[in-house]
Image (cartoon, rainbow, N blue to C red; front, side):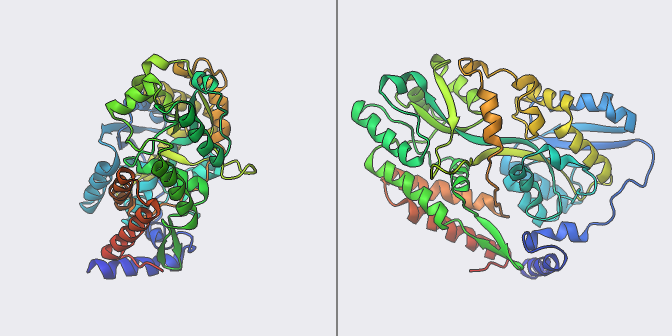
Length: 442
């Protein structure tokens, strides 16, 4: 069947069997059969993941609950990002995908739309109660179906050099308007320094900032996708950062380069909009400034708001190729909700857990070593995590992200119109969906 016809049939089928909140991506929920474990005897599962130390965490299962239930899990280390998504889809086309896969939240719609991951709503029990609503929503895509169990998250925060803020008489901004004023005030007092940089190489950062502002980049209307990358919220964020770059109030260089590391380490840049995993990056990028940074919530678009975006995070999904879906779902729920498993993930893998019960216990009872001066680091982080705004991902995030790097990269370098770059991102994303055979509403 030609891809266009297949996609259209896919959409119509989905629209009939589930709510329009997910629309076309729900075929996996419609077409899946009863996957309860009918067989008896030992079960062997394969899990594709990039998380370091996962084999040690899985050993806890195999020697404990897994041994009791006769369910053995074998870890197969993989690359992350688009590389893994492509490998999963290739394996699925051959009917040889593993039982379990680690999937970034933004990759789930792609996997669901290709019928590569299964609806495990009936097998994960009360797992939903362990997670903040905005986090759980990322694995349901707005329906009653559940396509994965959240594993780790990246709530966004504001990091700043506490000593330099004091030296220059700066106040930690609580709104984005104050953020801009702080950037300008620093430039006047220390022209050789920048509050921060706009990095056009980090699509996920901009997506998280747009998410905080209320953007919904992919939604559905009936049996069609609707792309809102250039919606009012995203335009507001793009214009805000574009104006700061154009006037020279902040830097316009990419992050994660030797130059950026040096800027942080020497105090040339004195703040960073990042996520909960930032301490690990700062440990490497700015080792000489350990103990001089502090963390605060993201600035808000109005004083009455209290919402954060998300940058990063992943889940554990069960594939439609698995012959042991119930067993795989049981493991996925254990991995991401069991206290011992979560503490092992923190110790062996260094993740920040999505499950709320683990965010202030065990490994998170004391602050990161780099932030030893901020004893309430993880208490604040847990509070911020609860305010994470719902996301709205679609089946071609990779295309949108690639276009972001190209269009915003040029705009940042030239100090030109960021909103025009956003429109390019919108147009390329819509064109790609239509090329793939998806129906797209205006």
